[in-house]
Amino acid sequence: MTISSSTVKTKYWHKLDDGRIQCDLCPRYCHLHENQRGLCFIRERQDDQIVLSSYGRSSGFCVDPIEKKPLNHYFPGTPVLSFGTAGCNLACKFCQNWDMSKSREMDTLCESASPEQLCKAALQTDCRHIAFTYNDPVIFMEYAIDVAKECQANNINTIAVTAGYVCDEPRREFFNYIDAANIDLKAFTESFYKKQCGGSLASTLDTLLYLKTETNVWFEITTLLIPGLNDSDKEIESLTKWVANNLGGDIPLHFSAFHPDWKMKNTPSTPPSTLSRARHIAMHNGLHHVYTGNIHDKEGGSTYCANCNKLLIERDWYVLGRWELDQNGKCNHCNHPLAGHFDPLPGEWGAKRLPIRIWN
Image: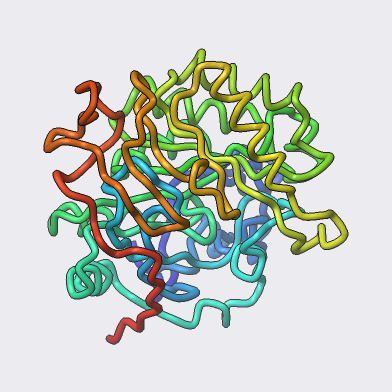
């Protein structure tokens, strides 16, 4: 399967009558001539086939709190080893990780690690999870899947932070190896996806429905609210009603604040009041666990019981406070189960961020 140390063959593609090759990984369906790269940058045509050119290479490794992914209902307080590569199959003008996801320089991939080395590093840093993040892992799925297989052998959970912009067959293969995910739901209009991301809303909704109806993957959703583009009451109403009606009230939804970046440096930051308004709309529409992100908001960052509304998990940024769950993940006050995966006691990683090196 390997062509070189960082280049491997892939299988989601087919030849076209005009001599080009179509990549079938995502709905972008790039049509490539020899030595041409897809928009994602790391999948390209070599020797009449599509290859992944970033296998085993990363833009860096860091131990983060799991709440930073964000995942608030998946073993709170525990550390996760996070890494990404370069490139992305969307073209979001507001990208908050543009230095990696928009990179067109292989020098960005300055670190290397085999699946075995990654798992060893996770175990050495007391991480029970490895997260594919910073850029979208579906574009380096061959590498991610090999890491996930090694994780399974070492009892390490795998987490995908993704926009879910992927075709059905590779989606099924990829998520077969994933334990938890945060899905980036950019907005709730096709016009936003087309103009601001170069993608489609329908593809992300398909991924969400697939995860809910056909997998056991624990997933949460994040929507970055951008002033004047996707933060209207009407759009938030539509988005939250769709989530409640199609995915259920227990799906955690995170509304995050935008800050000026990449190609939207003249767009103002999201006011905290916008996130609070969105949170109230979502809860009114039947979502029980709605969070505000990228702002200091203890109420909007904490978890409450869906039945009695008592505080269950107190959060101050990424630091946990009161813990009102019993040994089985149920409310101490009314015995109602909290949706998610929980240890008998919370983790104590806190807000620490620990960059690490992985040595050959």
